[in-house]
Length: 197
Image 1 (cartoon, helix red, strand yellow):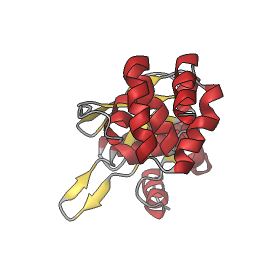
Image 2 (cartoon, rainbow, N blue to C red; image 1 turned 180 degrees about the vertical axis):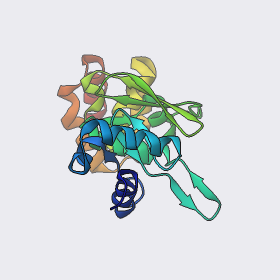
Image 3 (tube, one colour; image 1 turned 30 degrees about the vertical axis):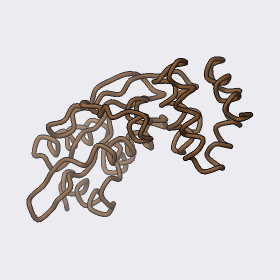
């Protein structure tokens, strides 16, 4: 009969890279204490990476050896397992849209869950709790625009939105206009102005 650690590794191997294992999903293999202990041993041996309480990922194996999963894989897995919305920060969204040349140095994400830090290989990833409106249209281009405008603020946001209106696809701008009632007043106003200019 296979040991518990071997059974867990066999289950992990069935999943593609970036798919998280949850301790709760492994309880059919044994009681919670035994599963937690086996997972802890696998993390100690670097055969699994712990990305949150009870959430684990298999390291990525390449011809150069093993490494921690990418930050994007870990964030996506954590969001799925925890039922949280996790998005890039406003500064990262502004950079991606070409509204700033500043490149965020640290890996920081906004979360609908609690604020915390997770260690991912040699990298520290920070999750910051944000207000609900910051997750409006999460995972869509218009959601990135909302967070970028929030980061720029009222003074710079209006000019940036005029520039973006010329470059954004019409459906993205339409999503932005439709979401305006869910946003803070100052942001809704500049979106409204841009829509009717």
